[in-house]
Amino acid sequence: MRERCRLLTAPAMYIEHVYILFMLSLSVDCVNYDFPRGVRPNVATFYDPSKDFVCFDGLVTIPFSQVNDDYCDCNDGSDEPGTSACSNGWFHCMNSGYLETQIQTSRVNDGICDCCDGSDEYVSNQCQNTCSLLNEMARARAEARAKILREGNDMRLKLIEQAKQIRLQKEERLKKLEDERVEAEKLKDSAESQKRFAEEVEDAGLQVYRAQEEKARIAKLEKEKEEAWKEAHDAFVNLDSNQNNILDLEEIQVKQTFDQNKDGQVSNDEINWFLDLKDVEVNEEVFHNSVWPHVKPLYMIEKGLFLPPEPHQDEPLQNENLETPAEENLEKEDDSHYEEEPDTLDKQDDDDEEGNLGEQEADGGQTGEGEVTPEHKESTEPVYDAFTTRLIEEANEARTQFNSAQEALQNIEREMQQIKEKLDMDYGPEDEYSPLDGQCFTFTDREYTYKLCPFNQVTQAPKSGGSETRLGSWSSWSTAGDGPAMIYDKGQSCWNGPQRSTKVFVECGSENVLYNVVEPNKCEYQMHFKTPAACKLATDEDKLGHDEL
Image: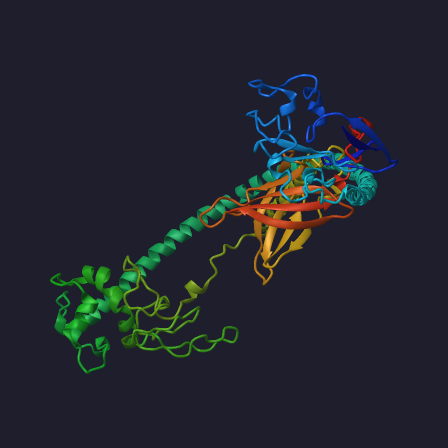
């Protein structure tokens, strides 16, 4: 017969499925139990000394005298709860004054003190009873946790009140925005009607100008085409020294302008570079379409068409020097003008911007060397009369007003959508986590600084500097496991891996603290976050007595 002592405690408080015992009273109740060593109290009735013992599996029945005789008779080890005879049995530590526990029977009398009351080493009887000391330590931890729980719960209640105010403010703001949206829609519709009317009037006023502009555009194109053809024709006539309407090598060869390498003569290779027609006869049409784009820059220089103009008072000369095409490096001429000599081809356009002899207009048209004529200097913007100008200005103003009204409406609708999303957000049963939205908390280890922004995202950044990496965006709560956890998914993808994701375990704490960040699997992170929002005292029906202490 052995004596079992139990501590009688007041009801316990419960934090996140862990019993926290707050000792309000403590007494020791010692009760005598007449059952074999190592037997669990809840199965003690199966060990009746007046009856044969039936193994728990029901396969073997033995005399009770064979229980704890240091010989394993039952396959399940149930006949030897107090010895190490059976490798699969369990020894129950009474641990009077502390938590009862069980150890494998193979650890009984192995020289190591596993039970705080020393009952597992009864042969040597050399283990001190440390149950009272462990009880005091457990009580201190329980009281510390209970204090954190109470303080955290008080803060949680304040967070709930704060959350109520946040929700109320958002609801009031949403109602106000709804009224503003109605007015904004009216303003937008009115502005749209005014814009439509103003544009119709503007369009009618511009019709006559559009016809005139199209006619002028076509006339200009025709004129430019004629001028380009005349320019090529005059060049052909000038080069065709024998006037047989065919250009041959000799006629080109006498033109020193085509001596690109400056060796004093024009070689066949240099001529072929310009003509590049093999056996094709170069008549005026072939010259105009295929040869002129190549020879035009050199020919214009030979004819002195690149003379710089007189400096203008309001237009400074941008390029003062011009290299010859023989060096194949004509500089860009941006908005610079050159005069033509009186007896040269008229109305040449400046188009020697790149200086590459082969990069000319594909259609063989005018490439633009020479001074820009007054006709080309004129602005391409049409000139409207005063009435039409006023119509355009009024239409522009109507468009501006409409754009402003539309933008104002979109801003209101965008803010309304954001507020609705916040009102629908799961901030906990009592919105206790709502005040955390908009805040961020950091944790730094040896390499990275991690940042948790509840209900938004999780990021990491190198301590040495660099851009942030998104470890996930807010998704939902997870209740699987020992407590609540925040799930953040769809983060930035890992190299040759999945998108990053983070699970944030939420615990009770007296202040908001992010700690203990790990990456158990590739691109899957885990964080622990303490917050008063997670501190909740159990309700009366959840308070449970715990008599192990």
